[in-house]
Length: 210
Length: 141
Image 1 (tube, rainbow over the protein chains, first blue to last red):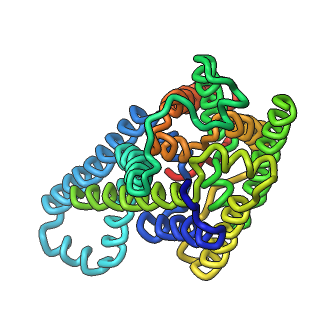
Image 2: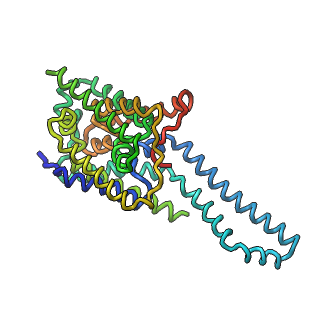
Image 3: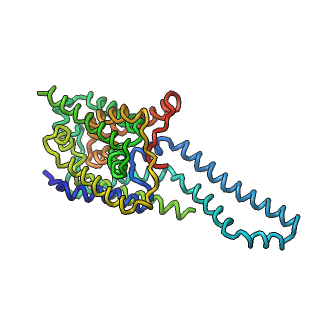
């Protein structure tokens, strides 16, 4: 039996992950958001393409304007114009690039999800916790039995998790960790509701198998 | 542009690896531990979670200006969605990240859960664009 981290060490680790995510990626941690991006990969790819086309169009348009201006007024006029607004010109350019980069490619989100799996696998293997098994745990089998119906329960449970987190606009990490830490009222409500529903159903299951 | 993409993928994968390792050592993949938390006989993981929120709260308070504005609003789906998620969590022992931790431990039924989550997210996307259409404020862009 493996010893798990005491609560204070776990809190440091879990809080630390959220902070590292913010520092490295510049957003707040939210795993259901990553799921949504991976599932909607086709739309995500199209948005990226449209953004890129827009930036290229803008560049092409600017070049055309510049050529037009050169033909009309000559080089001196252009130089004078550029001299008078050097900052404005630069700002516009950075905004366009940022718009393009603001749409994270869906493959980055997929990388994130697969890395969670890889990290868990490595640590579990290292601690001798890795074990291919057809059930989740003894308690889970005690509640749901150990027939094939368990797999159906998992499938439907998973659908509830997927549908529910998208509907609520966040999950344990997005609402619970990031949202509550930012003191967002909707996140407090969501966290309270999903914890209480999980507690309610678990208590009910516990009573029913007794 | 290319190197930016590569860095972005690297950043996501580094955070993902740490996230997976930390959740494993806390014991979130263990349905027994989770169930003990939900029937309130062992509150270790609840304290872990509360402690992580408190720590993040303090750090985010200091970094206040540098944090992008969160778009999380109270919307018609907040309560029913969270209820559905809570029930699903109690049944499968998996939230959208924990399912990967279970898979990392070699628990094969988690494959069914992962497929279920995929279908659920996809169904919501369809249902949302056809019937609901309100602003859910899901994480990230």
